[in-house]
Amino acid sequence: MSHVIAVDPAQPDDATIRRAAELIRAGQLVAFPTETVYGLGANALDARAVASIFAAKGRPAKNPLIVHVADAAGARSLVRAWPPAAARLAERFWPGPLTLVLPKRSVVPDIVTAGRGTVALRVPASNIALALLRAANCPIAAPSANPSGRLSPTRAEHVRAALAGRVALILDGGPTRAGIESTVVDLSHSPPQILRPGPIPPSDIAALAGPLVDQPIAGAPFGDASAGLPAPGMLDRHYAPRAALYCCDRDLERRAAAALAAGNRVGVLVITPRDLSPSPGLIIEAMPREPAEYARLLYDTLHRLDAAGVDVVLVESPPTGDAWWAIRDRLQRAAHDEERD
Ligand code: TXA
Ligand code: MG
Image 1 (cartoon, rainbow, N blue to C red):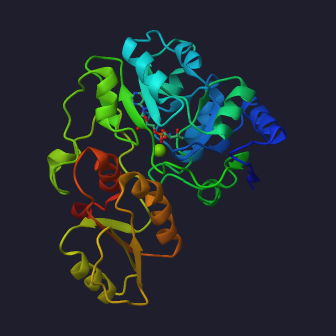
Image 2: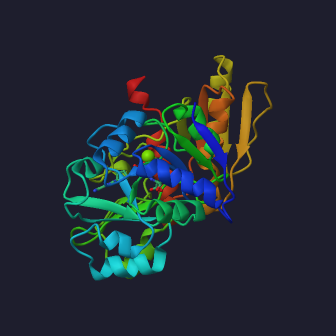
């Protein structure tokens, strides 16, 4: 069994942090909260420890990990170049939900970066994560603490349910604030490119880093192949619940009725009120109209529907545009591929 210890995110208990740091130094895995999602951490400079992250998650070896550091100086010690755009973005957004991809130094083991010449770095905005990084006094490689391909965890309970026994210690700092994974920006070539949309919108990145690689921002409707072109580095294709998830627009009521009639338990995520008749097999989740609030609740809601044994999740397509890009990206990756049915 994995040990779970509650930690006050406002004032992390020293003894608990010391214990977690000792485990990291000893090559063990520790799950901890960040402001985005929970991470599954190991000493980033210890190739054996990092290998156990891949094993615990069942993560393909070709998918590189994000390395967490306590501050920008920690990041600079791991990279060969620190361009002005990196300095400006780090100054403005760290600690925070921004990951920068830069040319790596050889001290970063190849297993961390899946053999790439670049490393992804971020300073998390969580007192628990920062206290752990300082106490361990080493960079911590940490992907989201979920089995590969599944939903990222926004609560310690999600980690325990999915990875119990595979992690030495879980630090429980309560639900995470941002609710979806960090924005990943590749600064290793010019112009910079967003590899994964996240809480920090592209306009904020471009304001400090200059024009970005032109990308299909979430303007196209779901089902339009051009909307989902995978960027390099976007190997995490799905962040999927157990239930089959579909995004729909006008036909949501009809599809809910059909799924219920076929004997399914159905969950729906709606932003606008709908005319859905109550049914014992139907769970209606009213989602916030504000994108940051929606993001904070998205995985949590999907985890809850999974736990309730829902077979089908129908999601009202969120609005298009910059502010909803990250949410539409996650929904698209979570969506059931109807072609494969
Ligand atoms: O918010 C987050 O970023 C969370 C918390 C725990 O920090 N972490 C997270 O890690 O989402 P993970 O491993 O689930 O996602 C890492 C993403 C993947 O899409 C991976 O392909 C990309 O970052 N990535 C990592 N290193 C890269 C590199 N050198 N070049 C390009 N993409 C990279
Ligand atoms: Mg992940």
